[in-house]
Length: 128
Image (tube, rainbow, N blue to C red; front, side, top):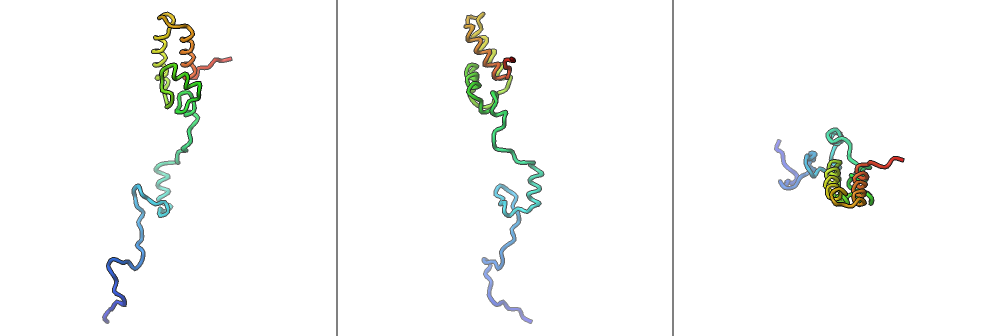
């Protein structure tokens, strides 16, 4: 029996939509991903990070210090924003202390301000 086509089909046109394979790259569409793909992603990367700043970011050594910490950073010639570490504070304090120490010709009040800036940044508060 000879087979005939009712309509000639163009090679450029498809008769049914093509099944999409989930892409594995930067442009993955979340709507086309299957639940198993989502499970693999969660297992690989863990839980998502919260974009909000943590409590450590708002401390004297954190990204966004308060006004007192900014003044203390200026006294020690440290950057006004961004994270700094305790060794950075200690190194800056030693340089400022060498410059402002009363035994080396500095003022007593200035040395007290430098020491207070170090104590504030390192969290050494006055216990009362």
